[in-house]
Amino acid sequence: MLRLPPLYAIVDPLDTGADPIELAAALLAGGARLLQLRLKAAPPRELLRVAEAIRPRARAAGALFLVNDRPDVAGAIDADGVHLGQDDLPVAAARRILGPGRLIGLSTHDVEQARSAHAAGADYVAVGPVYPTRSKTDALSARGLELIRAVRATMPLPLVAIGGITPEQAPAVRAAGADSVAMISALVRAPDVAAAVRHALSSVV
Ligand code: TZP
Ligand code: MG
Image 1 (cartoon, protein in one colour):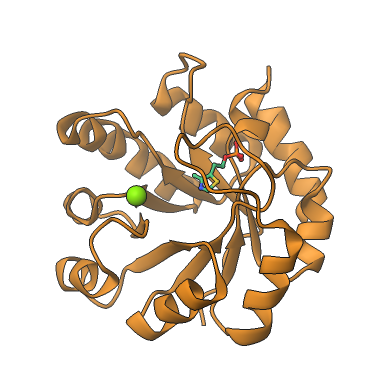
Image 2 (cartoon, helix red, strand yellow):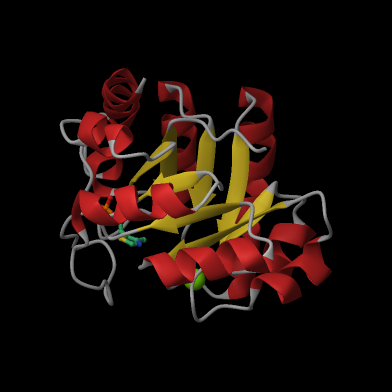
C-alpha cells in the first residue's frame, strides 16, 4: 500500500500574496516531499501554468505532486495524482481520466464518507477538519482527534489529517492514527517558509 510522507504540504498562498511557484520552491527547499497545489480562485489555465512550473521542481526533489480539484489538469501535467472533495468528480470518474497508476485522494468528514472513499477506490483519505481553520471558506466544524481515531479503526487506507494543525499539535494527530499531517497556514503564513517546513518535519517524525 501507498506510504505517504508524514508532512502533506499544501501550496495555497491564502491571502499572503505569495507567488505559488516560489511558495512551492520554498516548501521543497525546506524538505517537503509531498505537495498539493490548491489554487481555489485560479482559472484552469492559470492552474495549469502554475502546475506545469512546479512539476519538474517536485520531481527533481523526489517529491510527490498532487493537484487539487482537477483530474484533467493533473493528467495534463503528468502529476502524481489528484486530490478531490466531496463535490468534485467522483473517484471512479477521476480514475477513468487518470488511469490506475496515479494517486487519487478524497476529503472526508466522517467515518461513512471515509468508508465510501475506500470502496470507491481512493488511494488515501483526508480527514478533517481536525481543529478550527480559517484556510477553507466552507470548512465544517472541527471534528477533533476522535474522528481520526474512528476512521483509523475502520479503514486500512493511508490517512491524512487536515485542518488547523500546527507543528505543536502534530505529534498528537499522528498518535491518533494519521499517517500524514496536512498544513497550510502553519507553513505559508510563516515568515520563513522553508524553516517552517523544517520545524514541521521535526514534529511529525
Ligand atoms: N480542508 C479541510 S480543512 C482545510 C482544508 C483544505 C484547510 C487547512 O488549512 P490549515 O491552514 O492548515 O488549517
Ligand atoms: Mg475540491
